[in-house]
Every structure is written in structure tokens, then in C-alpha cells.
Length: 355
Image 1 (tube, rainbow, N blue to C red):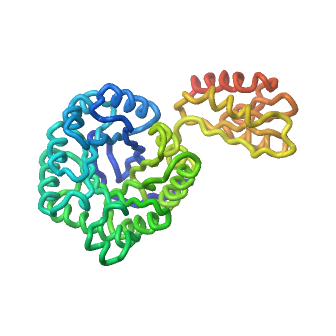
Image 2 (cartoon, rainbow, N blue to C red; image 1 turned 120 degrees about the vertical axis):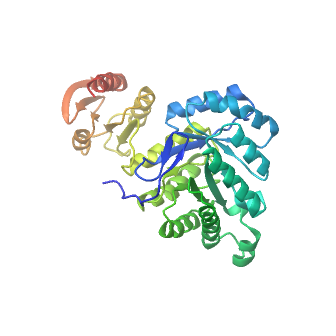
Image 3 (spheres, rainbow, N blue to C red; image 1 turned 180 degrees about the horizontal axis):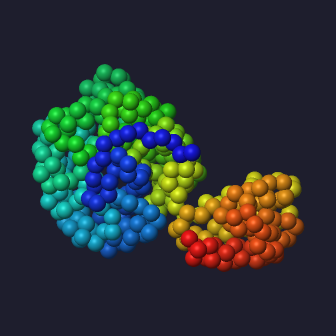
């Protein structure tokens, strides 16, 4: 049973709905220089193919601003402009047609400027993401708390949310992010308990490789399990496509959204009679382009094999140099170790045609 989500009001970023009864939205950010239009659009297309539903682009320079109309026109998913320190870029990004802007009031400056940005967004139908980060809290909150703790992050998020609502604007979501997992969870919990505003969740500066994935999975996974989160980005020092894949792995592990192939494989142990890691990698490579939600079981011995294979859409129950190929719990045929990956691919393609 998937977690029961917190009830939030629904907003729109372009044609994508966030909050309410909409699915949890997966997003990412381009790593290209935005003014390199062709490279940026190619990366957006790859991310879209991987399942990305919203894309944020950096707008730190004039040339990036000038590139926005072409990117917005040709992007298959809504485009959000990432704005820091330069409020004029927020206004000009909206003029260029972006579907959303991300601002951090802590580094925008005066409240009146933030209000003018909000009024312009309301006029143009542009969504806003209020970003509250541990690295850019307002000076008075740092003086009050001494450091960027969960309570300081929460207070900043509440402060600006209340202002936007007072100014008659509700097409916004909030992100409260820090690199400390526990502080991040606590600050989002505090906010979620007191509002119905959609939350974008993630662990900022999570890092690279296994440590970044683990940190993100723990922080994001706990919040999702508690029903918190309407859109998510896994922030890794890696190719953005990896962020999208990890995000769907997290969502799938909690039964929230299923996309692509889920491979269930037993741990290595002395009972295994085949080169199980090799078989799993071969199968993973063969099935990497499958988008339909499928559960594949690859079991290395008879102890768990038949039971797990029964629960999967398709599965391999391995013996010494061979495997039984299962479909919905029923054995189909016996295949050699060298044929396993290809045989499973063939059955997946047949299975897809039946869906």
C-alpha cells in the first residue's frame, strides 16, 4: 500500500499540475549552458525521454535570457527559469515566455522587489517556486537562530508564503532544502503541518555516486513515506538523467509511481550456481529502454526462486548453468545461462504486446 499523501492545493506550471490529486512530479535541471540552445534542448529531450516532467534552466547571464524563447518554444516539457541575485532577470524571463520562475527571496533583496515579481507572475500566469536554502537564509533569521537550523528554514518559508498569499497570489510551491538530511526532514514536516501549499522536496548538494544517491533516497524517501512532497528532484553531482532515474526508483520503491523495469534479485551467497551479478547486468542492459512498468525477478537458487518468480511479471529461477523462465508464476521453458538475458528480453517484448 502506497503512503497516504498530505492534501495540498493544486497549482499549474504550464500544462503540468502539481499538488491536489496530481501524481508526484519528477523534475530536474539542465547542466548545459543555457545560451547553448541546441545542446540544452538535446539534454531536455533526453531527460524527457527518461521521464522528466519539468525542467529548470540556469539564467545567470544576458545571453541565457536571450536563449529562453527558443528553449521554451521547442521544449517538450514546461521550462522554469532559475533566478538568483538579479531581480530584473525574473521580469525578463517572464517576458520571454517561461512557465515558471524559481526565486530565493533571501538573495533577491528588498521585499518590494519580490512583491513586484509576484504581481508580474500573477499577470502573466507564471508559477513561482519559493526556494529556501540553508546557504542563503535572511540575515535576521541567522542572527535569531545562530545557524541555518530546521526552525530557521521553516520560519523563512512561512514568512514568504504568507506574504505571497497576502498579495493575492497562490500559484506557487515551496522548497525547503538543506544538505543535512535530518534538518531537511524536520523543516519540511514543520511546514507541512501548518499549510496546504505544495512542496518540492529534495536534498540539496547531496553529492555524487553512491553517497549522493543514498543521502537523497533516505531524505526524500522518509518525506514521501510521511505523505509529504508534490514534486521531487534528486540533486546529484552527475548527469541529470541519473537524477530522474533515481527519482523514479525512489517513487517505485514506495509504491507511488511505477515506470520502467524493476529488477528484484537475491543477494549473493554460497547457494548460487550461476554468475548472478553478470546475469543481472546483462538483463538490465537489455531492458534499459523499456518504459512500461514491469517487475522482473532474477533469483539465483531454489530457496527463494520460485516464490519470488511467481510474484513478478516475468522471472528467472536459476540453477547450475541454467534457469527456468517464468511468466506470472508459471514456468515457460528452461534456458541456458548464456541465453538468459536474451530469452527474458524476448518474453518482455511479447508481454508488452499483451498489455
